Image (cartoon, rainbow, N blue to C red):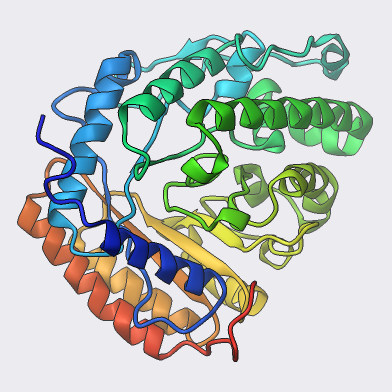
Length: 382
């Protein structure tokens, strides 16, 4: 394999990290960071890669090498262990389901609970041995050993307490439980939060320490040391603000109390936009999908003005033109009040030249965006 150090520029990486620190604090920068995610599969299907530790390593190595070689700036190297989104569910014994399409991500074969009384019979899984967690830990240790320390490691895609409830409980039963059997749901959420915190702790140890990680969970853009919290809560796109306050926030709070600051992931839309940042302790922003967030931009602008970040993934096969236009739309909708960090995603169908050209086109918008932000006077922490 080509050398990772052939195009390594540690000074450029440190510059990219400092720019992110400044942006998190709403301190003036020359451009909004643009993080192009190269997501190649080295000629294999998603299933082949997930089922082989060596292929996961080779895929990450290949994407790292290509990123270092062709991305002119903003890139902070990372590697990602990924066995699917359903690690927590698998720890309770739910089988993994693969569709006929080997490039379709795996999921849960079926919910475990159709009667809420079964919640009280659940045994607490072992965070090091049960389900996919043992695979995550094994591969994370391998990555920590094989990759140099300047390659950061993401956490595992553990979701969040309410997301795990969605995997464990039959869909209709989950939503009716919020009204008819809230005490049972709270019991499960409390157990899942305990388990998730335990999984994060052993995951951090496997990575070699929190300073080696992008976030405690799946976030792929490096975060400053005091902002590494991360929780996924896609279910909040489907519930009311009152239900979010009752069934999401208290359990998310427990995770953010352990790892303060950071981000909450919800692809979108965002009916609870005004609740996001006001966790206890407060968080810094969200990670979301451009396509599913468009309708919520006015609400996010009102809620995040001068203090919140929006990491926006272009992860639905958008063309280069659509990504650049989408980033400009974000600027026009959110500036001067809110910073949106774009994360365009490309795959093996893109040539090196096309990816570099995309970065430069996005950076043109990023420079204009930064010039139009109302920065905090004197900076300061969000």
